[in-house]
Image (cartoon, rainbow, N blue to C red):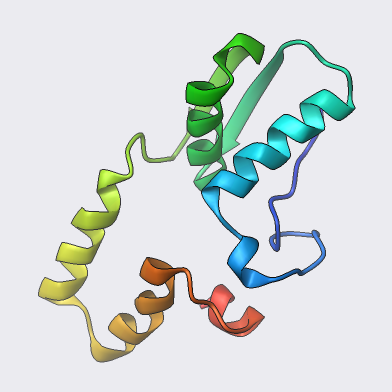
Length: 114
């Protein structure tokens, strides 16, 4: 079993915040598979990691033996629903905290944690 920390999360070193994207996380996973010389891998993805795993499965299904998404979203459509709920019920503080999430414009680690 190999645990992969996604860019800028967990124990991973911090880097440019604009590189913390779903596409980069999927490509990091594929690069790790190639680096380890593995033909097929099984992926257990939890929360956002599940989104990475699902996206990986759509791009690299030939290298996937098992897929286990846990407490994740199967579609990017959840973002529009989350934005709708925030618009209807969110506080000004929640609106301010969510804006960098929608745009990917995190300016520092504290903002990313929020």
